[in-house]
Length: 460
Image (cartoon, rainbow, N blue to C red):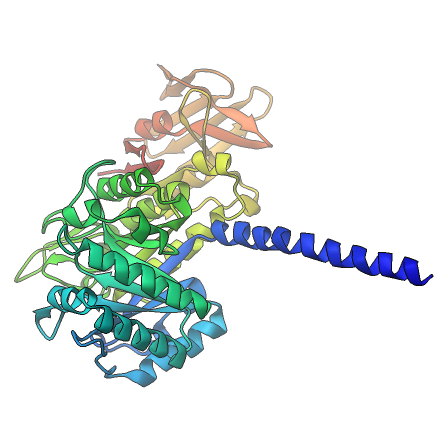
């Protein structure tokens, strides 16, 4: 019996030992599936209460900024209780909190020379890392972002030392290291700060926040720049789930905040330009930011808002829009997500939710967008009827009547036959129509953004 007991104990130990890596790997797999929704919170620049921060809809908050000194010490926070409040609220809602060390400038002076000086010396670099780690421990943070703007070919060796050593020190504390990095204008070329980053630097970061903005004044954060930035960092070997695309909530050259633009005119929420005075405002409105989020859902690991302070807390909220989109697509397979279609009608999204049972848009075998019939036609004010015997849908609005035979590559507009490049179908008891042909018959303009699989419909 004693021998049998020893055998049983030994078996349990072996099973336990073999189980540990399995569970660790499962945890790692689940973690990589998380789509990050990150908000930079600039503590010294804005005046709204911490309670307005939608931490229940964010995965991470990055508090900006912790300022380094050239001797390895840190500038004391001017609002330490603000950070403590953010940590408390975020922990309650399940969001992680990081602090961004650095930034572009402090008190009107660039921080690049400070980083260069402190990182060049083993002693000051060590002291800076010790102080950062102590700060992270004091405020119960989950990680630290290195925001050295920017290393160059002469300083990249010191940047690498700082990144690698900081990451190693934080890992011992169970904390993460990230970095704010530049975007790129192609899959192989970008600005010097992107090109000089070494593989050792990139391996030190849990993920990277790509600053895909500030290209110029009139088009400072275009959709294509987000796409090429993802391509570049993928080409550099960064896993897709570790690439987070930065999206701005401010305009150039006016520097107006998104929330203030919406307060001036709610319609400004849906466009990328506002004729503000004394300077015009070029920015990313809700529809552009939605398209970027769709691209990130398909090809990257998350989105980052700079600054989340500049969002609204109402129906025009960008954080809420992203949260809705992420939740709607959470259960889609990779293949389903690659065919996911967003429909924008007169600047507003027509939300198709699978659980509602009304069907969702998809791209058919002819590469045509098929959309459930009822929602878009009722949205434009058309009345609908269905002849089940002859399988014919009729939609009427004002002086236009469109007849849609199921299973045929034609529609009839006021009795005139119009050939279409795909046919209406019934799928899972829902009628799907070739959207372009039908809505153009009612005088609507139809546009297709392939990179984000977005249909843009307008009647003006």
